[in-house]
Image 1 (tube, rainbow, N blue to C red):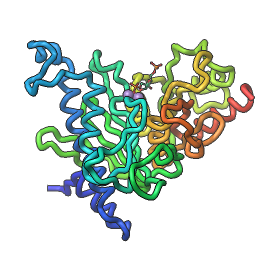
Image 2 (tube, rainbow, N blue to C red; image 1 turned 120 degrees about the horizontal axis):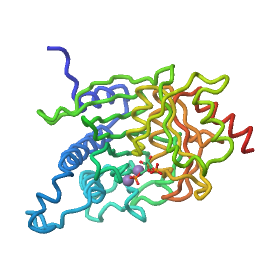
Image 3 (cartoon, helix red, strand yellow; image 1 turned 45 degrees about the vertical axis):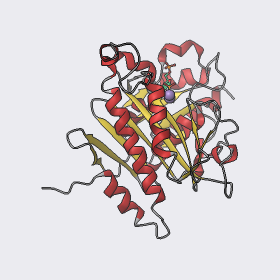
Image 4 (cartoon, rainbow, N blue to C red; image 1 turned 180 degrees about the vertical axis):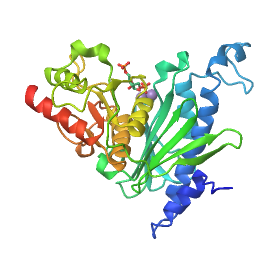
Length: 333
Ligand code: AHG
Ligand code: MN
Ligand code: MN
C-alpha cells in the first residue's frame, strides 16, 4: 500500500517546520476541514431538501430547515467559536463582525469566510465552494475588533477553499506551497491527492462572465480579444465559466489560464468581496506561482477599509494577469 496522507497528518507535518508552533493553527485548520465535511454532506443532499422536508420545514431536531448558505455559515461558526483559537470572525453572510461568545476564551487568530460561494448554482446541481482566510490578530487581547479583520493579503497566515464538485476537494496554503486533498466519502477523510500544486506555465482557459461584455471598459474588452487570439497572444484560449468563483479559480489553478471579474459600468468596484473571496483566492494562486491584481495593483497590497468591500480581480498565470494590467493601463488610464 502506498503512503496515505490524511489532512491531519499533512497539517501536523507542516507544523513541524515551524519550531514555535503551538498546534493552534493545526487544530483550527482541522476544525475547518470538519466543517467542510458537514457542508459537503449537506450540499450532496441539496436536491432532496423538498422531499426530505416533507413534514414542513422543521427537521427532526425541531429546527427550521435552513438555506444552505445559512447552514454552511453556522457549521463553520459552531466548529470554530469555542476552542480559544480565535479572537473574532467575519463572514460574507454576517453584516457585522462575529464576536466569540463571552463564555469562551479568545485566541490569537482571526477567521474570515465565504461559507457558500456560488450559491445561485445550488438549485442546478452545479459546483459550489467555501473559502477561508486566517490572520494573526492585531490587537493584544480581549475581544477581537474590526482592526483585526481588516488586513492585507500580504499578512495572511493561512488560506484555503473547499470545492463541492463531482468530488469534494480541500486546497490550502500556510505559505509552504499549495496542497490539495480529495474527500474519500467511504472513510470520511480528506486524503492528499494534489501535493505542491503549481499553476501550469502554459495557459489553457480564460474564465469571465462574457455576458457582461457591453459593461466592460475598453481595456478589458481589448484584453479579452487578445486572449481570443489577436496578434501577440498565446493563441486562442478556450473559455470556461461556471459562475462559482471557487470552481472557476480551482480550474484555473490546475489547468493554467486566467479568471477575472472586472469593474463594470454599473459596479465601479466589481462584484467579488475583497476579504472573503479575492484576498484568499489570490494568496493561494500566488503561492502556486501565479499572480493576482485589481488590474491596477497587486491584490496582496490592497488595504481593506470595510468588511464587505468589493474589488475587481484578475488572477491566474502571471503572464496573462500582467497582460491585463498592460491593457488597462494603456486604454483605461
Ligand atoms: P456568492 O454565491 O458567495 O454570493 O458568490 C457569487 C459570486 C462568485 O462565486 C461568482 O464568481 C460570481 O458571483 C458570479 O457572478 P455573475 O453571475 O455576475 O457572473
Ligand atoms: Mn462568494
Ligand atoms: Mn457566499
